[in-house]
Image (cartoon, rainbow, N blue to C red; front, side):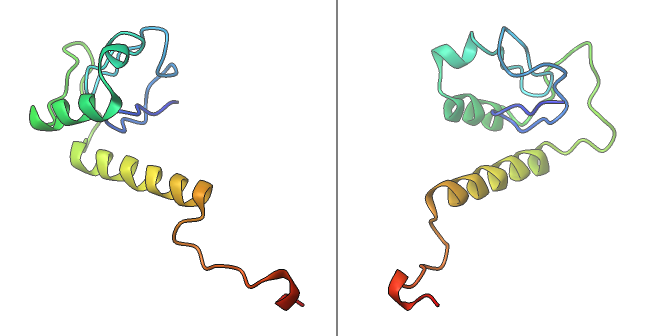
Length: 98
């Protein structure tokens, strides 16, 4: 399974590319994300009321779009901290490390 980078829906059957459409937020990848940034697409979905987009697929049991998005944002922050080291304790200079 794959995760939508816009809304955090983690049950995409295909990667978010090649015109895959997220049933949660309705983003069509390589179409919508070419015309708008992920942040803009996310903002539009949130401002639209976090509505389930698909008319064919039903939301999973206990679907909670706010929690879904919160988990995505936390995941993005963890990845940023991991890549940049922001928030990590600085290591002492090499000469002080035994």
